[in-house]
Length: 138
Length: 436
Image: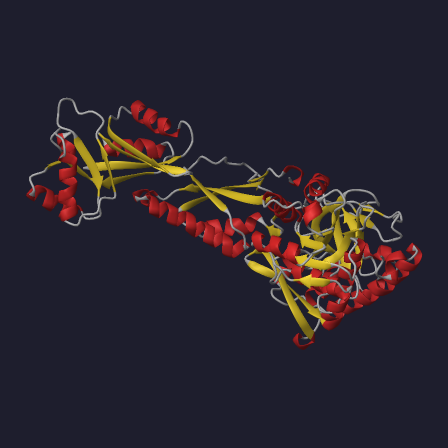
């Protein structure tokens, strides 16, 4: 699954500038996560058209990059996130960051995470029966 | 106390000394310093053309750039074996400005510093805490030698480590503090925070300040923090000229007396390069008299000031220069260190992840100068993780630290968020109002 990362400054309105540009470009945001430091932040998003989003934002002067991340579908039940994370932990997979989808019309929730070892993560999750979501399935 | 009789000579007598030394200096530099001889030849001036003091203006200027072009020792007039000391200050493009001294030069220099110390009220009874950073900068060792010359006892404390500074001030019964004025304010506040009152709990009664200008507002603040009877003066110097010892305030506080038997000051319009009449504000140009290792004629200091020739109530007849009122160029003084924006630019341009545009913000926080440099991030590969971004930040800081010798704050912003300029860029914002 693809994620776009955008460099934003830590000041009022900087996130809104990104989202309003994407709205104008008719790009839908599926998931969003932002972490801040005192000075700057990285806004991470899963959108329905990452190429278009990158093109538009870059044209408008943002620093944007597309990254490959892992999307997994969880059953909406107690302990399921913990279950998925323990599979990863058992497999010695380090999670750099994790966030979840905003809304997903009636479908099961999706968690997005980043790891440096995508292949191995995919392998052990599949083996454990966790459903991996691709861009096309969103 | 007045240290040397040369400080009190009638102007006529002083000018006779100046003219005699000037003739010798010009002949000396023409004979021994090829780059300056070249300048004189191109200007069509020979040493024997200097017959009066006003002939000085026929001579070509020396610029900071000349030091860079002749780095490290191309402007020196003596053989290396004659040298006994080197100092260096920050240069405009990476290489420092290197200066050298013969035995006689050191004697002359420290004698001039001794005069300045006396002007500021120092005496043999004083115990001095010297809180300038030691090292290649001229400030610390200059004041150190000058104060020892008058018989004061010097603690070579160096800068930083405020706790230790306070301990020494108290335990050693320090009576005289040498520091940059902003550090003295910071230190004074820390002393108050520690529960001590400098006025009653310490013996510090004199401050000799330099390395950066002290405004009248800072002086008032100094009295508020260190006590109403605290005698605080400032002095002026440049490493190219010798270091501290060029000029200093006496207790009348009406400008800094220039040691005119060693330095001839002129005030010029920095644009037209014409000499301005006495009392007008312009760029200070200094000719050093009688220096052996590094004679300098008409050195462009870049400092803007005015000169007053009336004799002073203190008994000295030497000309007084007003507190500095800015620079003819874009040099900044940050925590006593000279910083040229070109030095910063050089570091930034060497880092490919950031763009060529930048902004420099200088503020005074907690009495100390803080320089924040804003740069635009252009490399999208760094968006992978915060650690990559903060690694970049650290790399910029480390580059600037090694170039400037100063810690800086870095602010990364998105591309195109800094203002673009057509023509001369205004990249510097100095918010240090009145130095407070």
